[in-house]
Image (tube, rainbow, N blue to C red; front, side):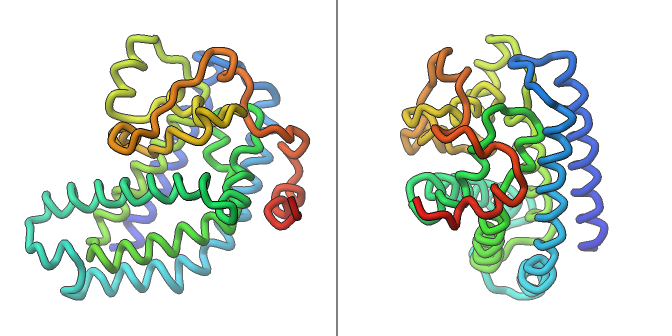
Length: 258
């Protein structure tokens, strides 16, 4: 069952990444430069991360998923609710947890060292959704393991969230141009490209805000929604704009004394 679900997840990832990448050529808002080079560089990071993440995936996340699926431990098992409610509660709990992890990635100096690699990108398109430091992904795996056990998540609910989270990241990092009206309506519920562009500004006013991954309601509840102005949206990344590319440069970046 897990193999089937993981294959479905990978298929969704590849298909929608390709769709967004192609659409960016026709409906771009920022017209990013060096798109093929960006695809190569960020794709290299993704392949490196995927290979290394097989270790915690195989020895940590997968066993915990199997244990959770077979045991009676966890909040959802204690509530004894039907599968629909397990899906809704589990999905919202995961999204809320990743909102707080993302927020901590910006407010905690140690976590920011690794998350900063994602923000070194001075442009933003769908390939930015591949750009993460391996240590940040390892920390995320530990959180996933804790959530799976504490919630007693069914395997299918966890994989479903992973699929939606992946597609959301591709969408809101993409360079797709939406009409102002469409963006206004969608951003009431989910993170849009314009909404997430606010989070990637050099300006810390909007960068240290807008932490939602899927549902924007978390930014509203915890008062972390900050809109950037037009000028700030044109200036993305961090103050040091010399480390956007370079595989070893990005890998070593968190360990350099600042």
